[in-house]
Image (cartoon, rainbow, N blue to C red):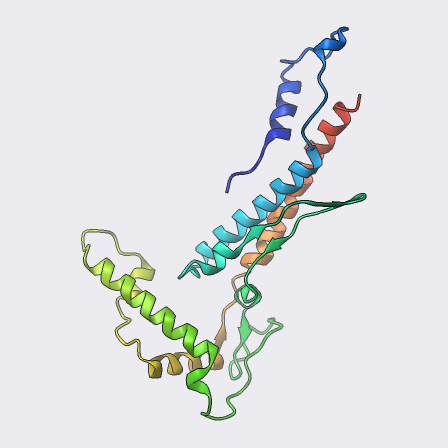
Length: 218
């Protein structure tokens, strides 16, 4: 997704003196049609989304791409003097971001989420986690087969791990789910770090937008 940079381009034009602001002719001036603050807000949302997606990929936590593709901005909403934009994402993003404590390991220790100790074997085969893991095993296994058909291509660390996936049975998914619950789910901070990146970007973006707004009000 590309950032909308109209406000920055306009400011560059003014700073480079390609527009004669000293003209005495009213016909030389035009009304500013763009909405600088709305543009800046959208740019910040785009920066946030791009950063979150990049962070997720860097953490090697992208399989089906469902989480990355779910991160989308809403239309900008203006109510009086309040302007907002929302970013939608699948609900489980928070577990990938903050991690989930293992019921035995207690790691990651600073995660606000935790797995409960096993209460018995009943219902395990129908759990959402087991179903998701089995789907993951099948997808990764299929990708491993595709990679093996092209041995000349470089094999990444993830592709190397895929080669080890040979069993996609439900029983295997149950075993993996048990290990994850026991050991915990590592955090990525992909969302938290994106917030920090967007906050820094916002400082400069709003400063540019406000400069444009002031210039166009003269």
